[in-house]
Length: 429
Image (cartoon, rainbow, N blue to C red; front, side):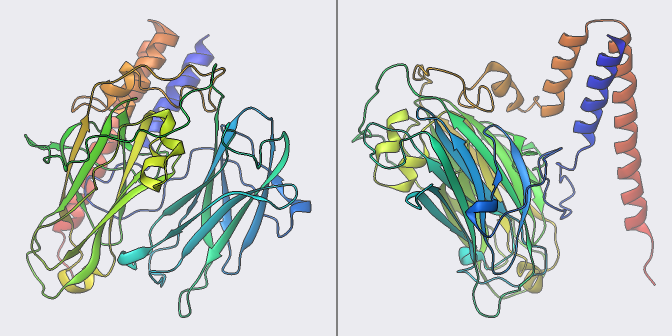
């Protein structure tokens, strides 16, 4: 029992110390899912490594990459695969650079495909695309049980860097419904542009990846961001609710000129599927990028025509990803720059569909009381984890150990902050 509590406590400490926060606006590497196994993409389907629903993997995507991975699927569940490419800082990318992901059956028939590009930012940063083998009454292809393949392809433009990109692959399973639901997306919904959220801004550092995203809810949130940096946040959005957000970049104290596509705000759904994106240029004065009005989350949205509607097909944590283009530093300096996120979640939460089974990972398409608590100004992922460990370990040795480890963690953070302040005050040669 003591060993189990100690292990849980050490896991908590590792989670607290994980590279997620960017409170000082310092650029850092992408935070891959902790403990994710490596899988090598194959150039042919015959050698494709297997991916399992509910798991996240690390891989890599070379310049001329066309990589295959294998899925063994039943005839009832819908499975999604998200691929996140992470080009290194300082690499050269064009607006048309990116990656494409597709899911195919054993005969090479395409079940789905999507392309993600760097777009107007023309700045290297994590980009994600998703593919799916979707079981649906309205589909005729890719409905049988058997072997399927995930194909991830690199899209490169002339003059772009040819380095290999690290790749994160995440696989999700959505169970079938107990009974057939609506097969048509809602025709009408409130599409008026909502007013931006107001109120006192709360400090909340962004995470460095999907797995390390910081939880936020409706309200005003602020942090600092440097050119080339990407920040990840997650927002609980329940069935029947409409997410919306605006990112605001503060003014610069020096510099001149203009950077097109400097600020990028992207919304991803719980399986890291792209939903919507907004850009803003930057001329040294405050600038903002706001998402377009989106429909309420509904299971039937998958039957819509627009990608923005299709993407809002289930409840759960939705991701807001903010990137500041690296070339902003050339015009206005390294920063950091003030960043404000205004988040809205409109509508009353409704009961979700009756699934005939569980998702992988478990409870992926639910919004719990713990999720909402973590997204409040007082909430944090570390605090939620601590409550879970305390509940599992009880009072006594486990509690004392947690307290000691928590004290060590806080002391380490204070020491780190002190070191940064002292280093910043040292005169340069």
